Length: 410
Image (cartoon, rainbow, N blue to C red; front, side, top):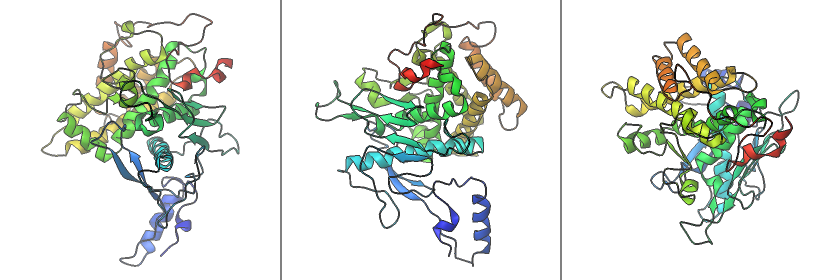
C-alpha cells in the first residue's frame, strides 16, 4: 500500500502534471487485488438551493487532499471557526451545526467549480493575482455579514457571501444565507475565473455587453456545474421528461433569493427569448440575452444527440454539458482582451465548432440560429443598449462583484 502523501500534495488536482502518471504507475505495480490509497474528503452540500427540497443536502467526494479549515493550496475558508476532519479525513457535521455545514458546503462548491474549469481547459487554473511566484489562495467567507448580496473582489482576493432577513417567506429570526445556494456560490466563482482569464473585462469603462458577458459567464458557470453532477442531470431529465424548455432547476438560477425578491422563476431564468432590442444596459438584464442563447444551444444539442434506444438521456445531457462548457470557455478565452461584445464571443464559438465538427456536430448551426434570433448576429443584429460615454457600467441592483469601486480605476 502507498501512503496518501505519496500520491497527492496539498491542493493538487488529479489532472495536474505528474499526478496522473504517478497514480497510473502505482496502480500498474500494485499486487493483484491491492490498489494504492487515494486522498480526498467527503462533505455535504446543498445540491441546488435550500428551497429545492427534492435534491436537498447530499454527500460529495472531493478527490484532492483537504486540510483543516477547510482549505487547500488554492482555496481557504475564513471568518468561521476552523473545521477539522474526522478520523476518516471527512468533513461531515451534524445538521444543527450551521457554521460548519456552511463552511464545508461553500468550500466544496468553490473547489468543484475550479476543478470543472481545470478539466475543461486542460490546465491548472490560477487566480488573477497568481503571477510570477505568487500562489496566494482565494479567501472565502461563507458568513461575511448581513446584506442582500455576494461578491468576488480582486483587491481583497476573496469571495464574500452574505445573509439577510427575508421579507416574504418566513419569520425574521430565520435568515437566508447566500452561501447555501449552489447557484450563487458558483456564480461568484465564475466571476473570479473570468477575471483570471480577462482581467480588463471588469473595468467600469467597459461597454454594457462586456459587463453582460461577465454576468452571463457567471450564470452559465452555475448551469455547467449542475450539469457536471450526474444526480442533478438525472433530476433535470426526470423533472422535464427530457424537454429542457419545461420549467426546471437548471434554467432557474438562485431560486430562494429570487423568491424573496418576488420572482417565481429564480433570480434569473436562462430559458428566455430576450433580444438585444428588448433589454436595458443594466448588466444583469443584458446578460440574459447571451445566457439565453447559450441555453437554447445546449437544449438543441441535447435534442439532436438524444436517442433513448441507444443511450440514457442523462448520459447524453451530461456529455453535451461538458462540450458546451468547453466550447463557451474556449471562446471567452479567445475573445478580445478589452471591450468584448456578444458577437466577439459568439463568432469564436462558431469558429471553434466549425473547426472541430466531430466534437461539435451541428453546434455552429445552433449557435448561429439562436444568436441571430437574439439580434447578436446576421441581418437582424443591433448594437444593443449603450451606456453614456464617460460613465461607469449600469450595475444598479447587480451582484456586488460588478459594483466594486476597485474596478473604476481601470
